[in-house]
Image (cartoon, rainbow, N blue to C red; front, side, top):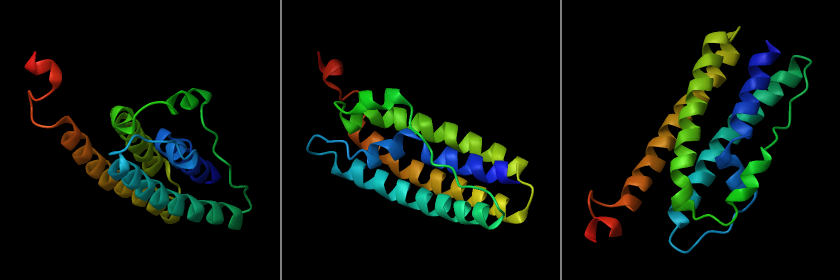
Length: 147
């Protein structure tokens, strides 16, 4: 019962994209679209996490405060465009974890929140993937390909 909700909050809150938004990491000019897309993703996930926390408290539990891995601090000097593949990999792992939570959910409320989180993550992942493709440009247009 509480484990699914706790895991949902941890899954949504301790991600690289959540860290990048919470830490207000400086970005190079031109990365505004990525930063805005990350903020949208985190806001949607935070809303779901807040609802899961309220449900957990209503059931007599304590909502966890997710923690970030210390190695996330190494991202402060990296370009968001360069970090985007890592963010996308994290989103794929997050979807897999959400699938496990959906399967493990013991009631309709838990399963519903996990499904909503999964759908939001997939939608935002698609938008971030489009940004990554736009940054990469057409195949063969990288500087290395023209040498």
